[in-house]
Image 1 (cartoon, rainbow, N blue to C red):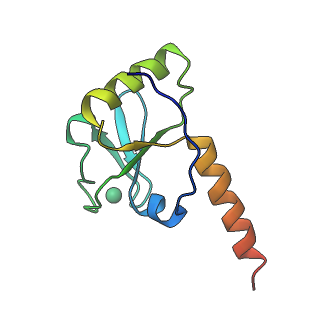
Image 2 (tube, rainbow, N blue to C red; image 1 turned 135 degrees about the vertical axis):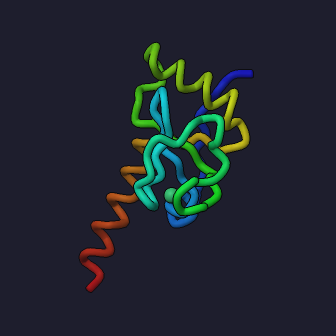
Length: 103
Ligand SMILES: [Zn+2]
């Protein structure tokens, strides 16, 4: 199986509520700021309990380290939706900016 990026309209609030960000060793829960979440236990946040549905990484997936992360995602978190971190960041920054001027 190959990885192909797909563009899809998606509710950013749902991602905010169910996202884990991973590096090559551990995961981080942006919701409660929990760090050191092990790949082996990537279903729910051990600190705030949210269910993870989306996974993202700040690493470039074309690098050796990125491919290592992809391997771990495939092994431990294949049921999560892998989202592009830059797309997510762009969408959340855009939303923050529009909220700021909506007063
Ligand atoms: Zn959490």
